[in-house]
Amino acid sequence: MPEMTITVTTHHDGTFWAESQQPPGCFASGDTLGELNENLAEAISLYLAEGDRVPVVQLWQRGSESPVVETGSSSGDRINVLVG
Image: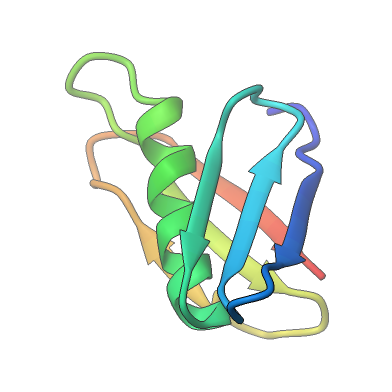
């Protein structure tokens, strides 16, 4: 899996937006960082899905011992994304 660069911005209304350069066009938003993380993991998982094979995406905070979010199905590959 190639490295993913995720850009996170805060909008004037306090919501969060994340966008990826790779894969292109993969984005998510959320009212909180927790919601953003969940939506981002789901967006990456669906973007990389191949037919019925949806990858399990784990978002990790730098220095954490367990993922902050895990989404997807057990039928797909496991993808780890480092955030922060």
